[in-house]
Picture 1 (cartoon, rainbow, N blue to C red):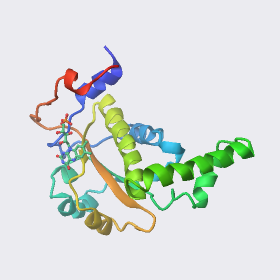
Picture 2: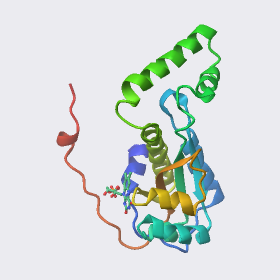
Picture 3: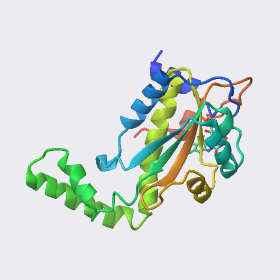
Picture 4: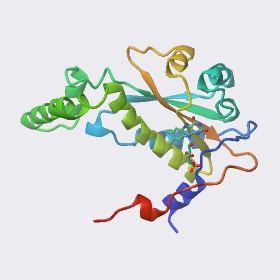
Length: 207
Ligand SMILES: Cc1cc2nc3c(=O)[nH]c(=O)nc-3n(C[C@H](O)[C@H](O)[C@H](O)COP(=O)(O)O)c2cc1C
């Protein structure tokens, strides 16, 4: 008996939503609180949670999302936007982020230097700043799904979309924001797909 495990057992990738059922403002607020409390590497918070309540907007969006029914049948869709331009080490935003910690000047300077070094040695050789930012967005995604499940709300995480098209439909300023991942939220309707998981022995190693 553990409320987090209970929520994780309730959660599944919901394919069939009841289009008549809406999430209350209070529950949506709790879910967004969970999103905003999520951690990010170096505390950069280089993201935005774009909530699509309007069915009209979601109808326009659906063809860009492989025509997946979840987009329109769910109560809401949250589009998680990455902000890769913000987190470039030379951007003032990085220094400002570290200054929020109210550390002594030399400690702040050390953080900025560590951050630069981390980007040079670990990020740039392996991935784009968009990919690094998107990795953080998936932490927000996970917390949104778990918070929703704790309230008896179903979700479907969605990577099945055409990024450029989604950004165009939603009129996203791509100089500032890029779509990382989507999540549909609402209430399940009828029978759902069973959960499949590998054995724990295959997935966990303890040394
Ligand atoms: C990042 C991510 C993207 C996903 N994209 C889609 C999607 O576009 N459409 C969909 O129906 N399911 C999508 N899924 C759901 C997975 O297929 C599902 O989570 C997986 O099969 C395990 O099933 P469960 O979540 O019900 O346990 C996605 C899952 C994740 C984590």
